[in-house]
Length: 210
Image 1 (spheres, helix red, strand yellow):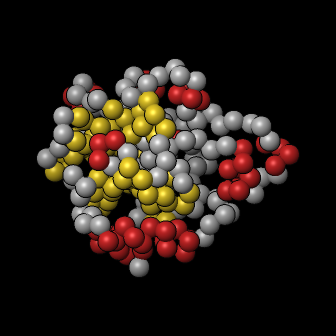
Image 2 (cartoon, helix red, strand yellow):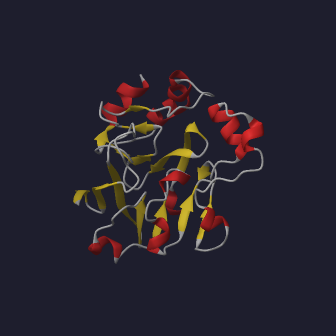
């Protein structure tokens, strides 16, 4: 674990579900951020002991980034999981194959088996503002208190530098996502904290969205 600046920590861990058929690297990034009296964990996996003891909440950039969220036993703030209608729209799945099915992502939280809340776009707890990436539940989270965005898969580094990742979605193009995210450049962003890849800076964001 390293402290990027006072009260902002980054570490990487091997994802337990990774294998060589995956298009993303085995190591994934997690973050801890002091926000007032809280220490918030973003997309946490294998949280270092010293930080785990201080943590008060978990924030997820996407429902499929739950990682260690349930095991930590902390309140979880997250966008909602996909519905079967989402699968049809995003991936072009035959609706007759998936009609009525539910995602496994965060099923325990939907069932009330842990503390937490689902949030949409806009204002979240801890002064966060959520922006849509390639979809409304793969987010870019703006933290004005540290001048940083924490990004889900929509803006990640899968080995070739920070870039837009569509992940097989058929309902958007790269240009669509870039246009949706370009308003981020109006914010005083200094740090870009992706869930996949190393932390980077505003210059990298500007290159991606130019």
